[in-house]
Image 1 (cartoon, rainbow, N blue to C red):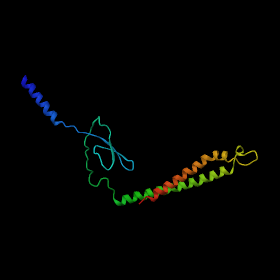
Image 2: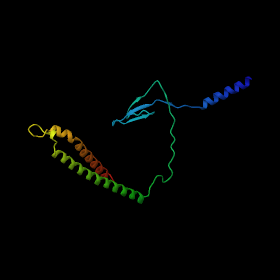
Image 3: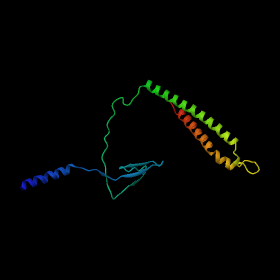
Image 4: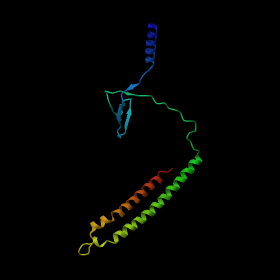
Length: 160
């Protein structure tokens, strides 16, 4: 019996020696632009602080699998076709937004030109505060379409 327990103990110790665990300090690093990176390697170029010195974090190295050759490549003609289609869609969206903006401006002008009776003072002059409060939704619509037009123009300008 003693031989079996000695053998089991030796196997246990040998198995334990083969298991290695990776423990590392984890740092929270903030660069000059305020981007945060968590890493186990402290960088002198970044403002790094240990997250917890009392606790260790178990780390497992990542496995990179190479991509197959030519993945996800697209031939030049297909890419040009896609780019052209994208530009067409953006041009159409821009034309729609410009139409929407024009209509929103007309609606706003109509609302501002026709104050309601409750927006007039006793002497008949227009109470601008009441008028502006009522037409705020029309102003907001105009501003929304202006932002959309600007964003679409910027997107089109960034195309190749």
